[in-house]
Image (cartoon, rainbow, N blue to C red):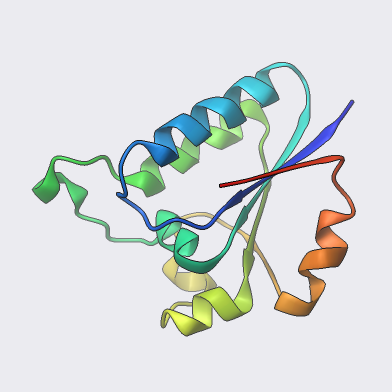
Amino acid sequence: MKHYLFVLRKPAHSGIYLQETLDIILTTAAFDQKVGVLLLDDGVFYLKKGQHPEKSNMKDTATIFKALALYDVDDIYTERESLMDRGLNAADLCLSVQVIDRKDIANLMTQFNIIISG
C-alpha cells in the first residue's frame, strides 16, 4: 500500500481546484491507499467554520471535507504558523486536525511515498 499526501495551499473558493483535488483524493482512498491531507498557507481556510459561499454561488468547502471520513481519510494536518498568520486556531476549524509546527513538515512528508502539491 502506498501512502499519499495531498498538500493544499490555495485559498477556498478559488475555482474548481478544490473539487478536482478532492475527487483525486477520494479516488485514491477508494482504492485502499493510505491518504493524508496537509493544509498550508491559504489552504487552512478550506476548513474554516462559518463560511457563507452561497452568496457567490460557491459550495461550502468545509462541508466537502467532511466526506473524507467516509473514505477513511482521517489524517488531516495543518501548519500552526499558517493558522496563526491568518488569525485562526484549531478551534476555528470544522474538523479535528493535527496541528504541526513548520519545522516538522519535512519530517511529516518522509512518512509518505507520494506527495501531490498544487
